[in-house]
Image (cartoon, rainbow, N blue to C red; front, top):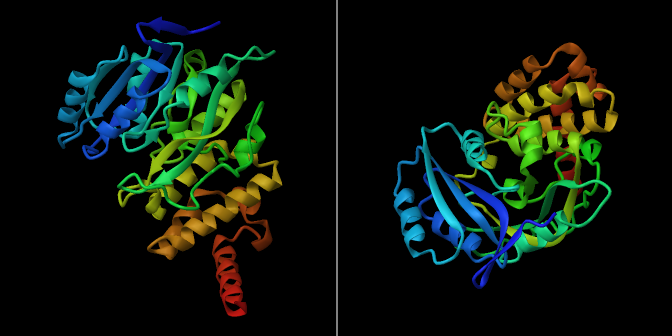
Length: 320
């Protein structure tokens, strides 16, 4: 089924784009214009103002007034509830056949929607539930950051639940995906208990229901700046613990999954401002059986596992 509609000199797709807005007045106009510059335009942009306190709302209004495309920009308001809450609010207002997401500080390349919609509409034995694309990072001035490209990542296509459970290989975060709305209705939206890793949690639920495909092109610019939550290692570790506990029953019988999860817990605990407090938080979050599965080499001890990692890093530094 085709969801394309010819409108004057523009072509639009039956896509609603959801952009959460929270105190990013510096970037929101650029994000919106990157959507309005698409070679295949979405039907609507749903800007979800999540209790923003800066002048971002005025910037959105300015873009609305100057917009000459057939894409409608709708500004929704809600009390602050976090990124997952804002995205879910937008999903609740979405009526298009497909839903795309764009974080307000990220940018799309002009052909993103066109290429992804072509991928979604290919005739196949099983319709694709979600398609993603490659990405790279930019700084605060839109300059590309060398070495951040994801073109070399392992491509994920088809039924990819087992691969995703081990580690997130979907590049570009939520800004890179387009999802069938019927699939979102089946699996639900973003888990609001998670303020990080909420994207991979949703991708896993989608992967349980259907297939995923990839447009092997770099079509998204992810902005890095001092306020990125990924820089807060304790915050990330806390969310990793919630995520791993949620999915533990699926990963327990897969040694490669347990190895990867244990490694990441130790890495983030070591990088925390207070490694001892981080170790205590992670240790008390898992029961003895879970710790044995995550850290089998050290008989379930995260502390000993962290010590071995420190010693290995020290030895490698001496050898260099």
